[in-house]
Image (cartoon, rainbow, N blue to C red; front, side, top):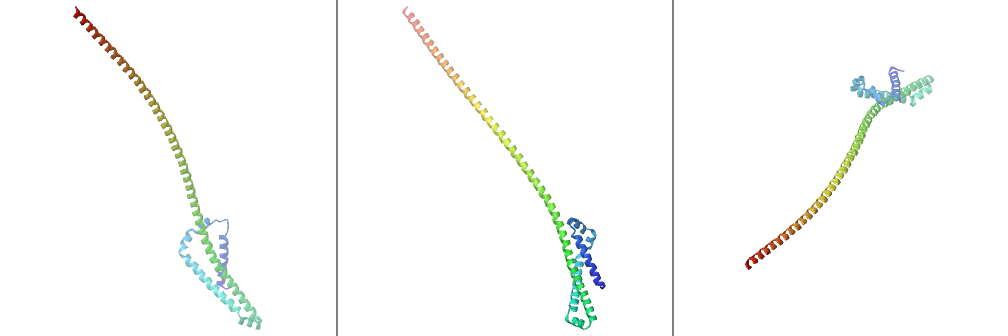
Length: 232
């Protein structure tokens, strides 16, 4: 195996290990987000996209080169030469095996490279979603508490209003009863005054009649005296 394909194979093994680590179930997405927020990743962030697409181009070139080698050694001409010369047959199959191996290595490296980028992106999105959902749950809990508090305040206000209305109704009833009592007392007082006025009128009338009788008697006595003096 040449140096470049050795490097690609090591890169493939590293991709397999990283993908397996990223898929460990007991490491949460929030912890991975903390790992991805390390200072070294922030320092490398301006070069991430360039490095990612550069590696894709390199792996695509290696994949196409391996595909060309496979097509080269699996064609009819090398097979015809291999049938003529047995030594060439072993050499052609060895080259074809290496080309197929390199094709698989480069293809899986390209595939896992894309998968790894997608897994990292999904982990970040899941962590952000969990943080947002936690914030939403907190806000929802606060909203529910506020709604319950508002409902309790409304109930207390209704109770206070009902009590005030009840007290006001009792006060109005007491005032009405008091006014009725005062009206009845005024009626009785007016009736008593009317009776007293009638009594005074009768007494005044009797006094007037008595005084008239006295005056008449006095006049009669005077007339009688005058008549007596006239006779003598």
